[in-house]
Length: 94
Image 1 (tube, one colour):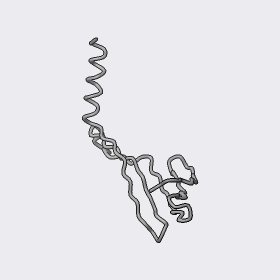
Image 2 (cartoon, rainbow, N blue to C red):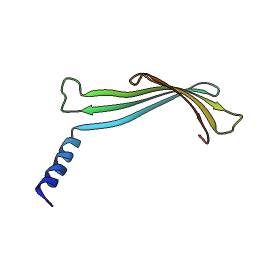
Image 3 (cartoon, rainbow, N blue to C red):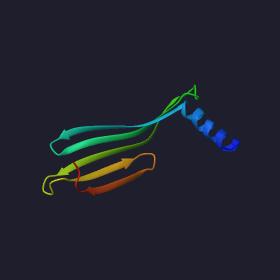
């Protein structure tokens, strides 16, 4: 193994020990077939002493279970960071 590839591998291991990235998903059934969903990416960077926790890529969604089509859902979502709305029709959702 070359010195450069060893150095690159060691830097990846070293940076991994300080950085934790995880997605958090919270779903709340509102009424009947309606549910509200919030998905966020959470990053913890132990090297940043002033602000080690960052919340990123948050998406808010309202889902409606279409009982006529058995396992289908209609989803309306909004991403504040990208400032966009999206409407989806999902089939075979459980």
